[in-house]
Image (cartoon, rainbow, N blue to C red; front, side, top):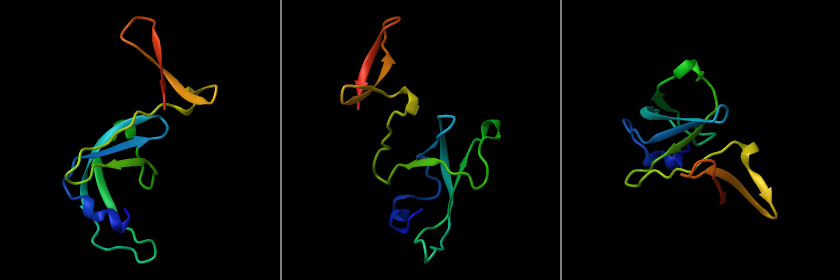
Length: 110
C-alpha cells in the first residue's frame, strides 16, 4: 500500500472488499498486519489481509482489486459487470438489468 494511504487503515479493520477480475466475484476481508517498514524505492508497505479462500482461488503473489473504506467514512462500492455485457447505443455505453417484473429489463447508463 502506498505510504500516503497508510494512515487511512488499521489492523483489525473489516472494511476491505476484494474483487477478482476473473471470475468476477467479491469477497470481504480484514487487515491482519501492516508492515512498519516502508520501501524507500516504491514508497509502499506490505499489508496482509485475511479472508476466506473458497475453492483455493487465491494464491500467494496473485494480483486482485481491493477497496479499502477509509477511517471515519463509509465504504464506496460500485457495481461491476463483465466487459462483454457493456453495450454501445449511439454514443452511450449501457448495460441491461432485470427489473422486478418478469422478463423485463431496463437500461442503465454510466
